[in-house]
Amino acid sequence: MARRRQGVREERTGWLVIAAVGAFVLGDIALVVFAISSTGSAGASEGRREVLPSLPTASITATPTPTAPAVDPDVSVAPLTAVLAAVDAATAYRSVTGGCPQTPAALEVTTDAGATWTQVGADEARTVQSIAPAADIVSMVAADPVSCAPVLLRSFVQGADWQATGDIGTVWHLDAGQVIAPGGASSTPCATPVQLAARSSTEAAVLCDGATVAATTDAGTTWSNSAPVSGAASVTPAADGYLLAVTGGEGCEGARVMPLSAALEPGTPGTCVPTVAADGATVLATAADGTAWLWSGDTVARSSDGGTTW
Image (cartoon, rainbow, N blue to C red; front, side, top):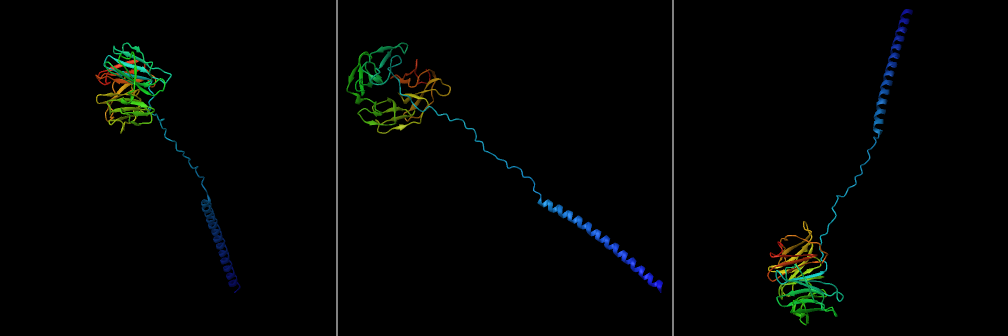
C-alpha cells in the first residue's frame, strides 16, 4: 500500500517535471520568436523611416542663341557735290556744287571724251542743280548769288559766258525741298529730294535721301516709288526709263549702273568701275546719242550700252 502511494507520487512528480520543462522550452521558443519578430519589425520600421539623400535639382539657364549683329544696308544718299551732263560721246560738262552764296560754280567742259577738261566762266551761279547741254545752247539751273533762289541761266558759247533768264518756271527744278514741274506745279515725292532727272515736260524721276527713286508721268500730280536701293548715288534719264549709279556692293569697290524701267523695276547692274570717291561725288549722265557718262572721284568713264560695259 505504501509502495503504491509512493509510485503515484513519483509519477506525479515526473509529469510535473515534464510539464515544467515543456513550459520552459515553449517560453524560450516564444522569447526567440518574439525577439526575431521584434527585430524584423524594428528593421521594417527603421526601413520605413529611412530618408535617402536627395539629388540637387539641376539649375538650367537658357543660353541665348548667338545672333549675328545686324548690318544695315546703306539706304541713305548724301547731298551731291558734283553735277554732270553730256552732249554726246565726246562732249560733256561738269561742275562741283556747294552752298549759297559762298561757293561759286566751277564749270568745266570736255570735247575729247574726258581726256582733258577746260574751265569755263560761271561766276553768276551758286549751287548748281543741273546742266542741260545741246549743240549750241547750254542751260543751267543754279542759285542766284544774291537771293539764292533757283534761276535758269543760258550760254550760247559753250559756257564761256552766261545770261540769266526769267524762265525758271519752264523747266524741272528743286526749290526748298519741293519738286517744281514746268508750269510751276509743285509736289513732294519724298522728304528730301537729292537729284532730279527729267525725261520730258511731264516725266521725271527724283532720287530721294532714303535711297529710293520716285517717278511721275503726269508732271508731279502722282508719284510712284521704288524700294530702297543700297548704295544709290545718282539718277539720269535713259531711253526706256532711268539709269541709277550704285556705289559699293558685293564684289565692287567702285560704282556700277543699274537700269530702272519707267515703272521703276530694277534690272541687272553692269560692270564695276573701280573708283575712290567721297559720298556725293559719284554722278551719272546720259547723252542724246545714248552714251552714259560716269564721274566718280578722279575717274571719268563712258558706256555705249547703258552702263553694261565701260
